[in-house]
Length: 603
Image (cartoon, rainbow, N blue to C red; front, top):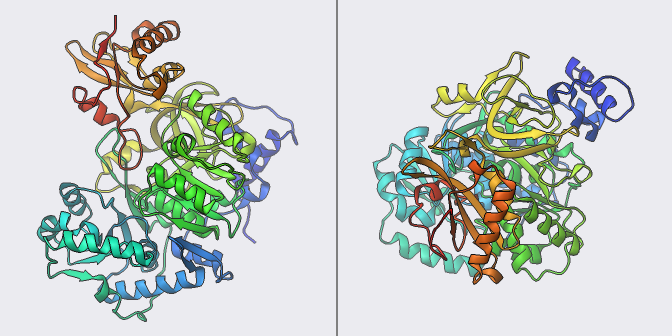
């Protein structure tokens, strides 16, 4: 039996204080009081995150005694855990036969398919590092990624080969494996997609270094191997969404990925073996491969894979598959609420959500919809980032609160600091959200300067990741994100600092408004705040009345210097390929947005 550490003993003491089992003083500082521990069991606090085990081995050990449970459901094509392990072994053997070894970086440019899952675990078993790339990337983006990671092998979605061919021919890749998304798809889907792919790729004949699927699948599948690991061995490279800056390569270790899966299992969320998990976040995102593929498989759940989900597809799958749990983005719940005819959601006890914040009126609207449809819990918000291997904190039903993103995962310490410093703030004081724990990334790929700016050792001796997000913590230990430092608008006239989310919250409280985003735009006198507003359908012909109310709300609830200097009604908000609001697009294309009405300057 492993010895309990001093920190674990102290955490048990703090838990006993928080639940009232013991009496004692609280300091008023989150990192010292850890009030969130009241929501965890003593056993959860004592649980260790293993150091020297691969992601594959950790997942396999959890499921080895349940070979007949369903692991993957792909358009009705079922893979049990026994079949999953067999496929992983076969893929690992083939990769080894073409020269893949421990420490190699292999680029995976695929949507979420069974073969993507087999490839990830097989390469992880060999000790290789998977660099996950969005297959919708354009040629220049692919060139950038390959120059950064120096990969010698690319696993490419065959549908996109004709787009990438010229860049691939100029690269230093030894091999490109052309992998169809239809290998495990039903015949009807396979015929349609394969026919289109054949036409597209007829314009770009395969180069000599391309290994087609038929050839790859016939390579020796009995070339097994065992690899030793340590806690610093890399498992993944994922990429930041780039909503506020250039996408960065983020290096994650095996321990990072395993920590997320184990910590979810220690929450009070009702995550049961055999239950259905709808996996709609793409595999190339950290929230995809870490929290929507490895997590449910580690937890022995039936993982319903969706190659590339849209809100419409999400709604259809909710009706058809009736999943018990999902991690998704607000846009999918909004579509479900507005467009779906589903009558009952009593099966859906885990409506997990993250990606970006909602205003209170929209969150209340979604929660009312879920309640009216018999969903057992409100929407469970979470907060995290790729640099934290996906999730850092999440809501569980017993601590759910409007506009909260929940409590830290049990092995995390989260607190609020004066931005860019190690001066900790007290409860309810706004500052930079910082995290210490086992899911902190190894670093940014080829960017030690940016790494040292983000990961810092504080005076308490702990390693902290500075998130660049502004928020506060309440006395229950719940995190309340407010905005990103990167989104802060510094007015050109007087240098006044404005956090857009506070303006968005005020504007969105209007009955006329469906959604709203505020960004900083460049004008003659410098940067100024501008509001892009989407009206509810029934008010599209009442824009002047809407504008009058919005202006009055801003005047009554905002500082005069925070009131937007310009309002523009647009048909819809722009989103990135990851389903996040594309702030950069609004900032950079201020004069070319498709508007429903002309721009309106503040009077």
